[in-house]
Structures are given as structure tokens and as C-alpha cells.
Length: 474
Image (tube, rainbow, N blue to C red):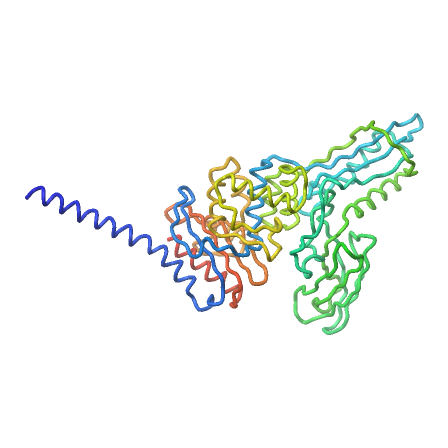
């Protein structure tokens, strides 16, 4: 009888334990199911997954293996790859060197050469401390005692194979966020159109162009509007010098700024360097000098990669992300371009046991609508980075809810404030989040969410996702 009672008690204990585990799992899953089954999402494609960040255990999911367009959340993949492959202390560089010899009269019997190695921060507005390249160049040059260049002034931008991805849309490539990587990127590869606008409906005027690429010509079709935001777009790419500006800007503005993408930043840099040489009365004769003798007079370095990654994710800077992609390609494949960077990233994560078959990459920034990735893969990268020596550099780069970056106003004055950090993504028909949520009990979970082709407002998605995070965090 005693043996029977013991077995019966064991059976009851196991049954209750099973019921408890069974009840706990659907509780997390129910939150996800309630979220995805809302009527406002009936036309949308959704992927969502919640995992234990430490163990990798999947706690709840919905279509987590479906590849969806991530928009800027793709920068999470690019920045994680850069930290792991290049290292957090990696620095880009720009070299200035001379060839030949300097005679007793200060004549350089050779060439002056500036060679770029893909530094995206060269005179960037995002790194005010790195805007001194021009002055550093001139100082280093003058220290050599050169008064005249008998050879040529050469801008060497051969390090990267720059081009516009064929999957970027026409509306994007002429605007500042469509700037592409170059061996010598300069001032974020952007120029600024300064507009004057009158009453709504009237044609505007371009009063000034800052950081202009000399060969560009503009056809202005922008009109004034009562809509109080920038709705002007610049159309044109590397195949033409013509730019067409269409759309609207707010009415009655004396200096409204619209930024475009510089297609030849080395031309802009060359113009500024020639100006400072001319101001110093240094002539460039342009003679033909060929010599193997060379001397580096300046090696100008970027901030460390960890700092670049931080701004890439905080400010969601497309140009920085795509530069990281190119540099990964140059590092791993000895060529810096779209294909080598993409191939190197996919191979790296495949080597870490993450399935890259459902990873469709066309750039590093997420600007292409043809990019696609599953939320499961995003979570696997988060879990990997949690164990990486680059963990702090990576997770510290993610915007924090209610505090900074693209999540500055998300979850402000709610339970989520400072408890959720993530990379966000947004473009027409796409919203996404991927990051870490700290629950009320201190447990950290990885959560990734992508929605495509929705008909509700972006604000509705933000509100509903915020509510989902609050429910999960309790």
C-alpha cells in the first residue's frame, strides 16, 4: 500500500509539474498570438520571436523563420559583423605622401598623392573632432618645406569599387541617405541645397549650394506648401550630371535646407585641397614624374570602430553602415564592394552556426527593399553577441527606449523606459525592431519583430508593439 501511495504521489507531482510548464509557455505565446491576430494587421506579413538571451531558449514565436524586409534593423547585422571581423579598436586611415625628391629651392620633383582607405568619418558632422583633415594636410605638407609641386596632385580613390546598388529605388539614390561608400568619402558625401520659399503653390528658388560637386546641374521644380515638413526629393545618380528636384517644402522660408548625395566626393575634396594649396601660393605644374621613391607625410586615422558603430546604430547612418560592409569585404576578400562584403558577412555567420540561407542581403544599411532576413536569425545574432568579447561595444550602441537615438520617444514615461534597447527600422511598408528587453525580474530576453505590407499607421504599430513589450516584461 505504501508503495502504491508513493507512486501515486509521484504521478501527481509529475502531472502538476507538466501542467505548470504547459501553462507557463502558452502565457508567453498568448501575448504574441493576441498581437499578430489583430484586425489592423490582417494584410501584413509578420515575424516575431522572443528568446532567453542567455540560454537561447525560444519562449514564443510567430513565423520566426520567414524572411522579411528589415529596413534599417539590418544595420544590427552589419555592425555586429564589423565588430567581430574587424575588431572594436579598428581604425580607417587616409594617407598623404609624396614621391620623388625635394630640391634646394623647395621644388617637389615628384607627385603629391592623397590615398583613401574608406574612412567614412573624414570631416563628418557626426565626428566634430575629426574635421581637421584639411588643416592637418596643409600643416604636414608645409613641414616638408615644399614651395612648388613640379609633378601632379593625385587623388587615389582605387581602394573601394564604388557603385550604386541596382536594387535601390530611384527616389532614394539622389538624396543624402542614398550616399554610397567611396575610398575617399568626405563630409558624409552630402551637399546642401538652400531654398527660399514664398506662399503655398509658388515655385521656390535655390539661393545657395553648400559643399557642391562642381559638375552638377539642378532643375528645380519644388513648390511651397502649407505642409510643414520636407517633402522634396532629388532625382539623379552617377550616370548623369543632371539633378531634378521635385516635391514641396514649407511656405515662407528664407533658408530651408535639403540634402543630396555627392556622387564624386573625391572631386569635392580635391577642390578644397587645391584651394588651400593655392592660398599658400603653392603651384602645381603637372609634370610627368614616375618614381618608386615615396614618403608618407600624413597618416590620418578615424575614430575607433566601436565609436563608429555607436553612431551608426544610434543615428541609423546608412553611409557608415555601407562603409562597414565594404571594409569587411576588403578585409576578408581583398576587394571592397557590395558583393564581397555581403558574401563575407554571410560566410561569417554561417561559420558561427547561424543559417544564412534565408539571409538575402543587397547592402549594409537596409535601404534596399530586396533585403530580407528572419527574426530567428536576428535573435541568433543577438545571442551570439551577448557572449562575444565585443558585447559591450555592440549592445551599448543600441538606442534605449525613452532615452536616446531612434527610441528616444518610444516608451517614454512607461515601464519600458531604459528597459528596452534595440535597433529599429522604418521605410514605406516596413517597421522592425530587434534588441533586448529587461523584464521586471531582471531577466533579459532577445526580441525581434518585423512587419511588412501593413495598412494601419506606423503610430499604431509603435503603440501596439510597446503594449506587447509591456505585457512580456511583467
